[in-house]
Length: 181
Image 1 (cartoon, rainbow, N blue to C red):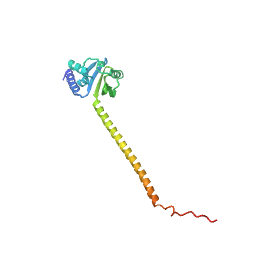
Image 2: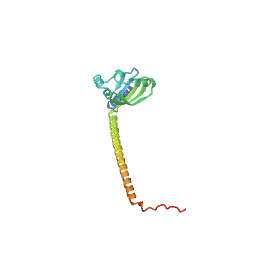
Image 3: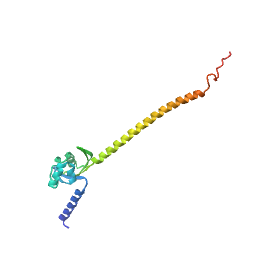
Image 4: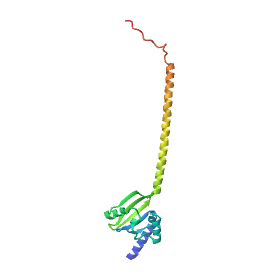
């Protein structure tokens, strides 16, 4: 097989993989122009970007800073050739996990962007419910402790009264004798 045929075959497979990948994927050059991205990436950044993607059949050569609010992260990876990973990057009312990595040092970087908004919202709901259960349990425990304390005090008073009733009377107690000196 010739090299050009192999290259076309590899490109075709890479494109199929990008289309089917559930996260947003983008490749950016050193001028911060989009070389390639998948549809999921376009949809993550609003209806306008998604419409441009559909009309142009991609976002090729678009300026990254017009699409995403975090182009400085891409610049940092281009400058340092170090991977950047950001968990829970807030973008409006959405949360993204972002990983940006070098493909060609100081020339081309790629990124995988996952929308984790729904997962984090569910975690917050679970945490809120757990806190509500803890608060109710503490309240119940405090109420039980208070009632036990009241009953203990009543029981102590009753038992003292009973004990005093069965104890020796004033008349039955031996009286101290006077010494005869």
